[in-house]
Length: 325
Image (cartoon, rainbow, N blue to C red; front, side, top):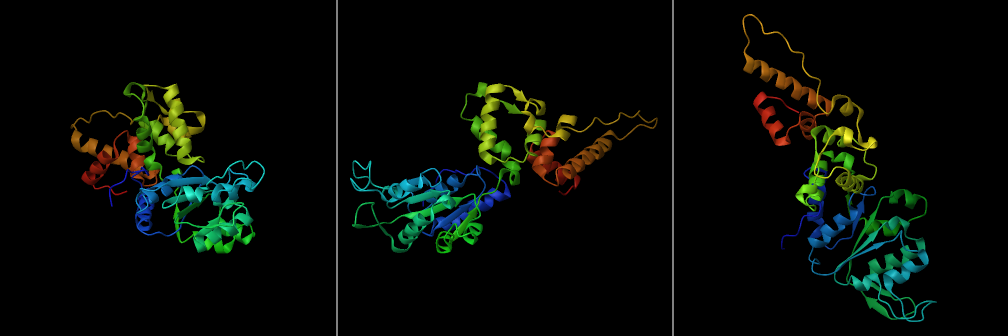
């Protein structure tokens, strides 16, 4: 299979696990259920599965089930014949026909009305459907990938989602991690988005600003981070962004107080007998690294941001000094 562009950026363990799951399921034709909070990139997961599958050269067709009125959803999915209902002035193909041979992505499947769930289940089982206003049965060869931010098991228990459809869709579940669980990817994501702008317009995150962002909750997840990146492009084009330059909701209190670094060490007088400066500095360096690791809960990337260095540089220093995270 030919190599496909990387859609899911990140080096964190959480995102690597998602990429591994995509590689596993892409080679099959199984239904996939993508579960995750709003803004975590569920459609990117679906696109990645499609691009790495044997259907990659055929259409990828997305449908947001929550954005289409329930009375129009059947026509949207299966199409309709001319005159099938008021306003049907011509015959129209539905999304299943548009996705023939490819992948149909049903976003926010938890918002689909119960009567439509019955019809979708039939298509998944029988691989056939009829347009609205037609009695002609049409065969379909489409892979369905569904996504939701809701807990479908709870909806099933509340009789708001069909159990048989749930198990039909959840052949292979993939959970998209929230940004707060992959904070080490923030710098990489921001740099990726900045590459779309001329070099003179790109801002640069100071270590303190990055450390502050890495401690945020991010209720809007990756989408929220992208919006903040665009805002900072407007506010600080071509400049360095300090922690205090961030909008107030993104400033972490302990980062603000210390400017993203630790307090300056107390300067001691040089002993009369002199000092082994190299050993003293190595000891001081080790103390700061250990404190940074303790503050960051052992997360090396967060500790590196606090210390104003690259993660790889910190890893090398930790090895040299015999420090473990």
